[in-house]
Length: 203
Image 1 (cartoon, rainbow, N blue to C red):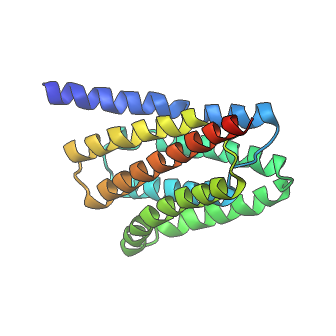
Image 2: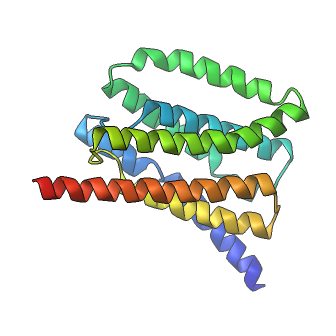
């Protein structure tokens, strides 16, 4: 009974947090009218990872509660990407990106081998998205437009998903994905805090 309650709490809290996960970052960019420190490549890779993961979960008909937040995350990432492209002066590339994502998404479900391979690759893609964001922070040495709250919430959701995966599907590929992403999210958050403190010292 306690385990069931813990699962309900983990699933519901993850869903609630994910409903607003990207909002702090979106509002930060809109308020600053600047996307400095944010990587377009990182967002594109993250979107790819989200799409593959959502498709994998639906393909194998896993419980809806284990991935319900992903359509919301995809929508928020798409909005954030549009904001970043707009402030970087590259909004014209939004349509080609959208077409490529739709084509890629449709190709995933052609055969079981494709979706399985894509799922294994999605861990690398998602990890790479975090590393690319780290590279952007290292290059700009400016984390003022990068929301620490968004990354903190991301750490929470990956931790809860490690727990729910262990308690439900026990899918090794899914579990590995969450562990890797959680560790990299912590690294990004640490970097954001470091550069924010360094910036204050320089002032």
